[in-house]
Amino acid sequence: MPNKYKTIRTVKTIFLHSFLIVVTLTCLFPLFWMVRSALMSNETIFIDKSLIPRELNFHNFYRAWTEGNFGMFFFNSVIYTASVVLGIILISSLAAYAFSRLQFPGQNFFFYMFVAAMMIPLPGSFVPLYVLMNKLGLVNTRIGYILCMINVGLSLSILLLKTFFDKMPPDLEDAARIDGCSKLGIWWHVALPLARPAIAVIVIFNSLNVWNEYILATLLLNDKSLMPLQRGLMVFQGVHSVDYPLLMAGLTIAAVPIILVYLLMQKHIIKGLSSGAIVG
Amino acid sequence: MHAETIPIKKISAVQFKSQFENFLFIVPAVAIFSIFYIYPFFEIFNLSLHEWNGISLIREFVGLSNFQELMRDKVWWDSVGHAAYITLIALTFQNVLAFALALACDREIRAKKFYRVVFFIPPVLSEVVVGLIWQWILYSGMQGGQHIGLLNYFLNQIGLPNLVHNWLSDPKTALTCIAIVHSWKGFGWGFIMLLAGLQTIDRQLYEAARVDGAGTWQMFKNVTIPMMLPVIMVVIILTILGSMQVFVLILSMVGQGLVYHTEVPVTRILASMTGTNRFGYACAQGVIFGLILVGVSFSLKKLSNKMKQA
Image (cartoon, rainbow over all chains, first blue to last red; front, side, top):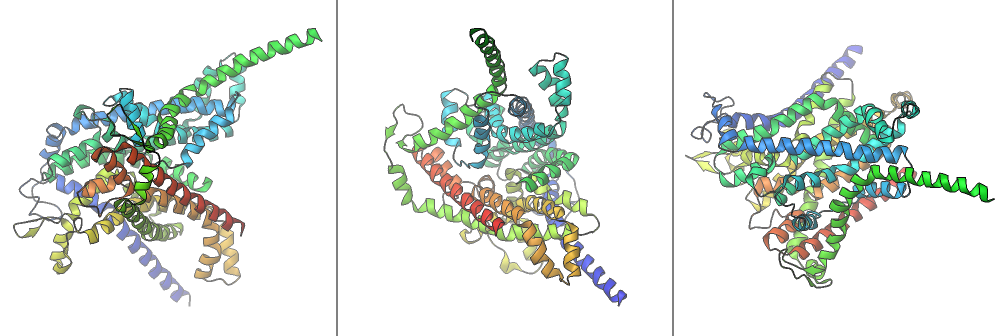
């Protein structure tokens, strides 16, 4: 009897693993195919379908970086991602700290205004936003795009940080206050450093969001020199629709940094999402 | 009396200054939010009542005529149907797969962490990257008598040439391909949320059920499902909101073609705005679609609250 029980368990385990491995391969294969296609030449890519081509052509990455302008697009994406994330952290932590620790009239009203914005889906809000940016002369400027993207990440970051500050014991802040630290000083020297775990989650999710953003970049940035990677990829694809090795090299350039960041930070990402699932 | 009121007034003046200082903390956030969220929020309603090409100084007030036109716009309602179709596939195929994987990884099995890391790779990629990779795999062109796209080449190679297809240009298959790629990109995210939910279930509940003689299926039905209902509802609502608004994936897989079989509401809004320069009509579409989404998610939340009570 115990033997039979064991066999059933082994069969079950094998079955489960085959299922999981098939899904794993389905996840990874398209990415492998992207990198593999990026390593081929224009002559071989349409004919050779072997998994590992005989000749590996690393020159495509150089061509994509220079001729395909992906170096410039990459640089722009880095600028946008860094400035937006920095802006979100400063602005949302200031507000979240005030909502959690300080008193002022209209406190609840303003807080629920930010929360409500997350509950209401607003498809097509890019139309009036574009009109406004046009009026303000912020179309085709880096600062215009950065401000719009800061706004996109603001609500969730404020909510996350306020929840975090609410749970934080106020002892250290009290000590700093007794030492004569100003409110702004307490925010900067005490609250921000303590909030590091929450800030890590905010940095990761907003970096993913800005790096992958497409529609506002399309509407607001028409100069090639201002475009981030996602927009650059679509423009490149529109012009050189048959140069697949170069396009695949560009896709690899856009995908690899985000996959690396994810692999380095996956614990925070999964923790952030999981707590979201349980709170929600 | 008089002597007492003065100190109180003084305190309130100090308080006022302090509260004003406190308020300054939220000023940057409120300023950005008002300019880039609240103003567009009201402006979309305002613009939807106008006929305007986006450039001219004159906006003609037309009342509800944009909305009346929208009600009769067949391409628009077809596009809502397309989004609903993609959502339906995401709700069934994607979420069932995510749930099955979460159940598999909730057990004591090896390499659990590895699977968890891999399944979340597609969700971190951008829709542009995912769309362009899959467009290349599904490509239907031929050169020198050979299929260029991997899928058609593969089907031909394994002796199923009759399954070779113009996947993305045939109206019959394009939308399904988009929905499947959308599910490929999204299942890992549902998987993580559902797995997190499964791991909060107290193992003693399963033990108690087993002692009472419950089989695997009965435990699933009577323990897992009821305990998971809140998380399942969150996943369902987020899947609906996300899938109904999918469009960058479509732009990168099939572009904004002249044919309408892969149009979804957001690509219609974009077409009204940048294609035909009808900003008012685009806003009317945005308002109606927003109301549809709010209605759906609101009624689902109500339903989920009712289920919690029951």
